Length: 571
Image (cartoon, rainbow, N blue to C red; front, top):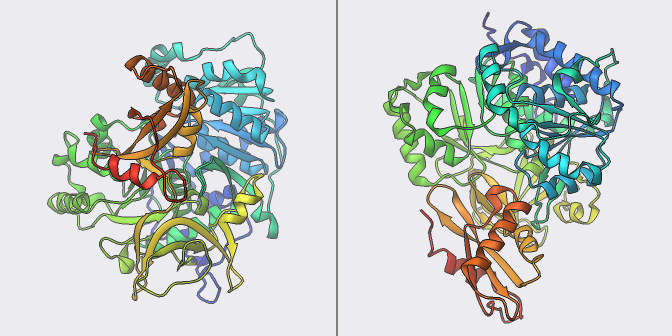
């Protein structure tokens, strides 16, 4: 395939506009089409060696949008997607966007009860799920408004031989009643397609909801984050104007999951905005990481710190020439200084001229909000805000801006800041606040400072959220689940340092009188958590206590428990 020498988006750069660029009146799908018109024959994505050109991707999206429309999906309807990084998931997100519908994207390993609650909260009638989730869906479908469940496999788009072997291996994953007409396979669903007109959002319509992602917000309670076409498209242009060395035809390794803003925003939409190729990886395998890198030679790698730790440890990576790599970006968690140094030394020793760069972002801001790269690179910082994004530091709990060098709460204003939390005006008002300058600022709940040169220094999380292998874990959610057990009086969850995962959860539990503090009780709590929580949220440690420490104001002293747990590192 031919190589295109320039990105199609440079024409959107506009130094006279407030953002430094113009955001076109179009949908996410419309933005993808711009790249397709510029290089129709370039690869848009690659999946286990199977490539799909931009021209063919647009055709697939148009076909599947017709299938969703034939199934009753209309503008504004919310369709839930529970899939790993597969072509079917990506095609569906853009197909729904093409007809003005909303993609509500969930983690495939979500607990059964959690899936039910999410579906009921957004009132989805149509669901696309990966086969391994079919049993969970079968158990809750009668308690939801679901009218149709499209079941897909991670093997659907694999090469023929691999697809056959995968199907034989995973046939047991289809655990639902196939006589139930509410279920339909992806292949059969595709055949339902009929021509349907494309929805063109203009003006204020660009601020309508396009995608719903999920986070704990600033309080730790799960929230539905509403993101618009404008959020995604502005971020795509920011990335193109920031990562100047990338060209159409380059490759982005899409290991980060699409149910995160980082994964969908950076590894998929940004890739399409570049006219690049998104290499879709449905499940990260550390043992095969070296083979993956050798096979695809990605221009860009975006990952959490544990991914780069795996890069250093994976067998075979020490024999790879990394001259193909233009950018290695770490986000989702603080990059430890020791790991930063080790990765940079590794890259230098393997024929790469780049250094790992650290970014900062949150789902409420779609993905990255600042990045330490190029002229904005400074080691041990998260760089400077992306073009068109502003950051300031305020006194926690206020909107009072602090001077350079002082620690406070990090606030962000810009075109990628979310619309708000769906059906939660109170939390939205707490998070999105209007400052004295009249602008809306996202209060991140994170502590930081901005030095006199404009570089942002991330400090710590004000909120109690912890991060495990790049995934957000919310102590209040775990506490609520454990306290559902009738023999538990009170539970408090804090973070314990972990050598590989960064942090894991520890639960301090006060049992009701008469309950034995035994291994049996602990196992019962653990098994209950496994049923109700995502696997990475299940506590690693459980400690039974008679009393929980209190502050002078008679509140639970979380900080005291946190300090105690800091001495209990898990290897």
